[in-house]
Amino acid sequence: MARPSVGEFVRQVRQEVSKVTWPTRTETIQSTLMVVVMVTFAALFFFLVDVVLAELVQLALSVGG
Image (cartoon, rainbow, N blue to C red):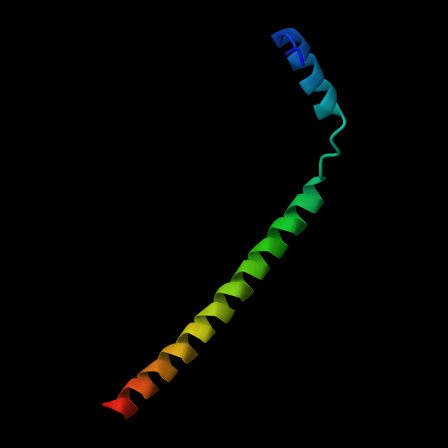
């Protein structure tokens, strides 16, 4: 397959970019907020799991010693 010239490549890139449906400002803000909320929930969940597991390990090690 032949490689297109630089000019042809740029033309194809511009043609493809014109087909993109860009999100509105509101959609971008909503998506960003949802990501922040979900990351916060995930961080809290894993923090709580870590605390519980650390306590269980501490309990198991104190019983054996």
